[in-house]
Amino acid sequence: MRLLLTSDTHLPKRAKRLPDALLAEIPRADAVLHAGDWVDTATLDLLESTARRLIGVYGNNDGPELRARLPEVARAELGGLRFGVVHETGAAQGRERRCAQRFPDLDVLVFGHSHIPWDSVAPGGLRLLNPGSPTDRRREPYRTFLTARVEDGELADVTLHRIPPG
Image (cartoon, rainbow, N blue to C red; front, side, top):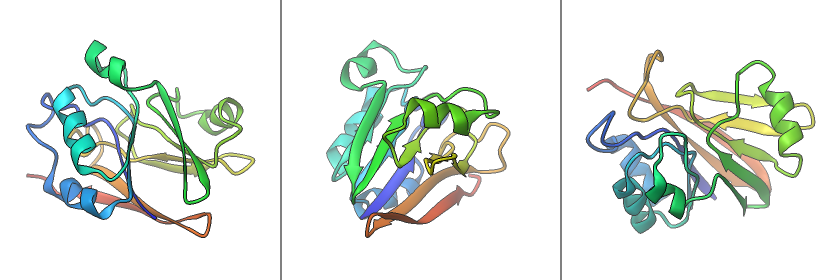
């Protein structure tokens, strides 16, 4: 099972459209996970109409229309792994401990908000992944997203994709 992980698309405030590199991954993915801050409903409509399966949540910059269509926390079993998606997890310091306590029933937690890619493992084995942002790099050198595979109940080939400037 192939996964595409993204967050913080912030359209049309940070970009006019999703980057081609991200759009090219959508048809390849069995599931797309979006960790919030869509900002516009058009991006949600696009992913709902093109992704085989979409698992998304709202973020702090998402207004009433998006909040009416998306949960604050989403959960799904994908390839035998228990995934959760949430926008905010708080400060980087202590993140693993806090998330392991808040989500003891998950194998993988996908989150956003910071626009900073993150890949770590909490005590107890919870994998935490932040794909960064494909449209707004903030202080990061690149705009980013993640792809991964789930194979035989294991997360494999977690790859950070860097989108070149332009």
